[in-house]
Image (cartoon, rainbow, N blue to C red):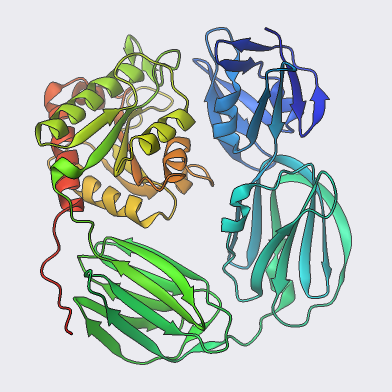
Length: 490
């Protein structure tokens, strides 16, 4: 069935748009209508490029058409399928908002017309034909020049993003541009004196967790970010400064001040972090481990690619097949030790990235592990193993550290290390992003390079697959192991 195509509500003409079973397929010229460039890389792979950088990659079907869901996964846009009118719409969205080194960056799914101006101590962006996503409220901005960010719809087909500025800022004129990555230099606004946090308290709880309380006083709640590395959390406060002096120790935790904006919290038993506001305080909860027997644990194993998506190819070797062999071995090993295991595919099925994440959520998974093989241009030019966790999701990173530390033991391949998936794409990897929508911690494992003879010898080896399975089992055991008796004192 032929389909009509719309971009942000406006009809466009594609060379081909058809319904194929449950999927809608479009020709590559759709990227021209989205304001994006594309490059065919061979073997059906297409690289998508925005105004400044690569956005993502998709793979064409055998009929040289692309599944619209794959385009949504790669770009971050929304897809609206209106079967009654045989039409499909691509809807632009804000993928990410962040500030680094005094540079405000707004990342859109594809280029969009916008207006920017400063009025009454507010930096205002008005976007044409941009959907106001439900998750926009989750965007936070860390900067000493901004006190908050708000979203609104001032007119039909228009989305407004307002950054409230600290201090007096002169009004500025409007200007118009069309980009998918918007960068704004914040240094023009100067800085205001930072509010101080002079009192910090540590409260042990009955469940073994601990609450770190920052006494904000009259100050608007600080912007808090947490990161973990080898059992030690770094707590960074972006819009205030710490004047508290000293070290707090209780309930197995040790809190110290690294500098005016950073706290170090050390404990090998922290499993996760939650941040909440209470009156004039900010409370950071360091969660006790989620103690479970293996028989109570549910894990989803995802064999990457499958069906019409062969993944990386070298001669007669298809990545999708090697992924499935490894996934089967991991699933069997976990099941033998009592873990409830679900596989996103146990045969040569075609699945979207979104479907894989939704499957893990539906199965109420405690963890998701996606298995892949790497590839690069040229034979024997790339080698090694690496593991990705989703963005700054601390539980995903925690499990990633546990697994990767096992994976490198006795492994003769190059250690390409553990990374956030934002190292590849600003919005992260699609399969991990989809699982994260249901708060399922996940990792993606690159087991080796399919086009490297040494790596490939391992990838096709039952012994190597057993090692991967044992490494996953060890990491799962450590992730759910019991915490020693709490130091809580009544």
